[in-house]
Structures are given as C-alpha cells and as structure tokens.
Image (cartoon, rainbow, N blue to C red; front, side, top):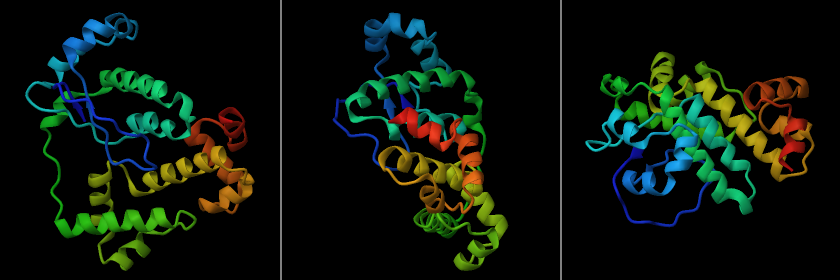
Length: 222
C-alpha cells in the first residue's frame, strides 16, 4: 500500500519471516526536496505518481504478484549490517515498478467471497506452509476442508493474489533460499524439506524462480 500522507516516524524491524503486506508512506514535498537528484536518476517523479494514483484522496493498494513479491522476497537473504540500506534500495525499486501498474484497475469490481470460504483458504494456506515437504492435490485439500475445488481456486487467488500452486512453489523456493543461506545443510536435505525427492528437479525448479541453481545461490549469498 502506498500513501503520500505525512505520518509520525515509528521504528519497525523488517523482515519478519513472512509478510502479508507493507505500507510505504512518503511525504512528497520533503522527499522531492531532499532526494530530488536521486529520484531523477531513476526517473521517479513522486508528484506524478501522487497525481496518477490519486494518493491525496486514498491510498493505493497493490496486490501481490510476481513483481512486488520478487522485490520483497530478496530482503530475507540480506545480512543485518546492510539491511537498512538494502531496504531503501528496494523502496526505490518498488517505485520504479509503479510504471508497470495501471491505476484504472482500482475501479474494477473484485469477486465476492463468503467469510467461511476466506477462512477456509486461510486455513489451507497455513496447513500447506506448515508442511512444505508434502504436495497436496486440489482434491485432497477440497475434501479435507470441505470446499469445492472451483471455489478453492477462485477464493485462494482472490485472497492471496496468485494461484494456489504458484503460491506454494514460490513459498518453497523462498524457504529453500533461506535454508541455503542460513544453514550448512546439504542441498539434498533442503530439497527434501521443500518437497523434492529428486535433487535435479529441485535445482531446475529453484533456478526458474531464483534465476540461479541452489549451489550458485548459496555461493553468492555467503
């Protein structure tokens, strides 16, 4: 969520292992005055962004997708001594990605889901992420949580902004990335913890999401 209003400065620690959303609050006049040259370097026009997304009238909420999720997920592998600087860089990156966002989608009516359906897909998400080593089928989840497969697909995407299997693939690869950088566990063990008995298939899946093989990723992030 992006908001151009001025608020008090509060301290917070980030990341917190898992995120459901981030609010970025920017005082446009102060930012333009103090960071004008830096913003110009990245072709970021805050006043234009404020106008384009009508931020004076309401905050802009960008639901999760591959672009912001990729930006945020990288914060989990950053050493503590550069985390603040890295977070600042990532905010700039998020502002740059706003060029790809169509603000007219704000007026698009979103599907309605019953509270019971939302509660069930949240329980399903928790269930799956607590057992990332298991690959559950739609039918298994549908039967266990008493929800039709069609409602499960639609409601999960409506709540989390992505398809259920895509969500779990990214979750597994983020978990694997964390284990690769924060532990000395063999890649075969890490592969098993995120649901892969075949190390080659795990490496292939990891590279598709992270752009590098697990071994390359581990060497770079050390």
